[in-house]
Image (cartoon, one colour):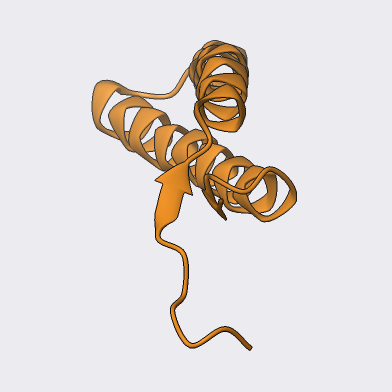
Length: 83
């Protein structure tokens, strides 16, 4: 191992790729989660409180899916490199 380690530098191409994909996938997953909440609310004729709860729960599920994607993408596309 070197006595002096090289500093970490951002890999902008990987960062841009992951952020762009996260925006696209995020829009799709959040849209899907709200559409699913609307469908369940309409299908079962739920009242306003239950439908709001469904929107919140499904919205958090969509946000969790984005988090899982970002964590996986960061593992594959490193944001920082030593050069």
